[in-house]
Length: 287
Ligand code: SF4
Ligand code: SF4
Image (cartoon, rainbow, N blue to C red; front, side, top):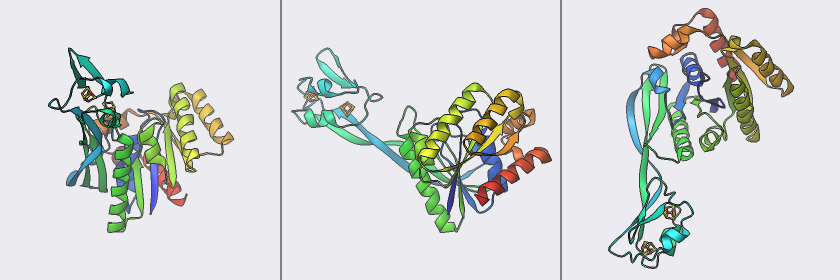
């Protein structure tokens, strides 16, 4: 089984459009939406949810006021500033609490409870392009890195069960914890970038993370014609760093129309777009 992640240093490069399009041409695979903070691959592949699972991401502290004697020790030791005082009483801000458990340990009255929280759900769905594993993190919930790992694990389980050879992962943007969870242990990464200064900067950062994990990287330049000078800079960077530019896609309004209609763009685009997607998939497979 091979895992391939489609990543980008920043949002808005067209990563999900490319993942959905690869999902149409690739056979024998499980699709994964690992962008759990802002999942949107499902919008393009019309999933029907088959299985729903609860995700328990962390713990939250609360005070049992029947036992609390307002000594303030918990506030003194909470390094996340999650405990505040109003009048004589102490309160825990549930959004600021990181569940570290220090207040639980220092409270002389055993008045703190630490409870495991339900922080999201993840799903196994069927789509016209094969199974999809995707997730939804609760509002203002964190631990998305852990949820990415859980979703990937479910996809591996499914691939083994159904004898599927590839796992195609729509990765989260950025270089934080979720993207580290998405990149660690994969075989290959396709970095989708665009010729803007922020696009180049973020591309370089995510390539750094991928190389740190020893992941073979390929580049795809989306909207390559919006700035030829920056596009040249990306190609020069790729050459200097021994990274293959696997494809270049021009800016096309029709892609936006397809997204608005919730169709993977490769279904409605011209032959040249289709060829780029097919060649990209073939090259990723070979790699
Ligand atoms: S440490 Fe315990 S007893 Fe003291 S204020 Fe906090 S919860 Fe109340
Ligand atoms: S669990 Fe940690 S972060 Fe949450 S209130 Fe207690 S000390 Fe603060």
